Image 1 (cartoon, rainbow, N blue to C red):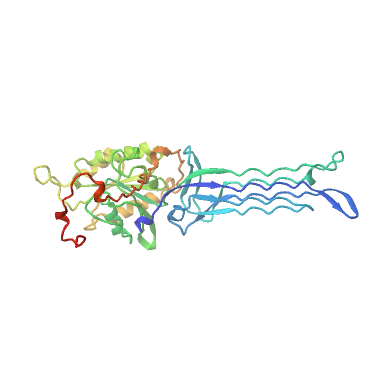
Image 2 (image 1 turned 30 degrees about the horizontal axis):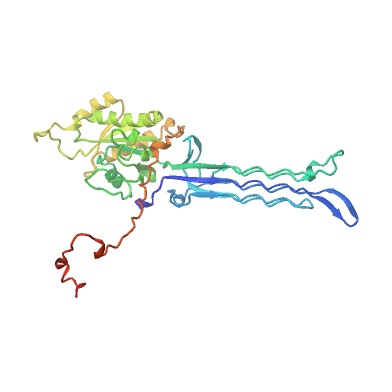
Length: 393
């Protein structure tokens, strides 16, 4: 399932060109001067994005590098109009953002189910010479060509829709927390970057209520510059209403690690700092030791001072023992229901195409295989070491 999560594709799109209008003068047995009767050309097909809540990845577009609508048909005689080109509908999951593939400029986004956005408009069909007849020009011998097609290379990014986003360094306990509070089954291990793709889970709350939580791969210092998994997954927390920062209780400086994470989010998108934030100090069941192995004071006694210092709620939790899990759910639910956190509107800044794209390794040219015969080698061959393997018998 992890390999099927594709949240970035770059494709070439082209709409259909409009059909040319017809230049025709009507002739009949009893109507030698019937006048112009050239029909109009058909409209070219458009490229349209369609939101589909049943999709959760851009996998179906990964290998579809060219998407082109059909052209409009040409007009004909007797005012026959050309056939309109067929629109090309691109099904995308909700939360898809489209950028220009050359400049990185924001184009559009699809947020709702069944929402339709015209990405490239088809060319209008040309008018036939029937439209150009006048009292002084009763036999126009010209018609209008159709409008040309529009073409563009676009980058589609999926920014997952969730209520709460988990933010933390690798091995901070984010995946473990998600597996405890929801039915999600993310990969959990004791090495960094266990989570390679965003994971979503539905967290059950009281009275049958619930909210969606998203876990993204761990962030390291310099992620906004492309280090680690970098910009690849930072975009998935842009739509979250509440950001849940997670720092292990075993960290040397909890405030400093929180500030590093905050700086990375600010460098990526300053609007992320306007979101509600909660800090969860995880792994409180693990004893804190200094460099010499001596046990340090319980971190719970310092949380009040840490909360006053950073200005957000700080809660101790342990996914192993269940400590603080219910209190964390209560705090998240309160933040989610605040009026200022109801609407998740973000402005999509232009992306740096050269930074976000990761060039695939160039395919190595197959080296020509050469067969070496004994008489082509100047040195003497020691044939004794090849005996006994069957070819010398």
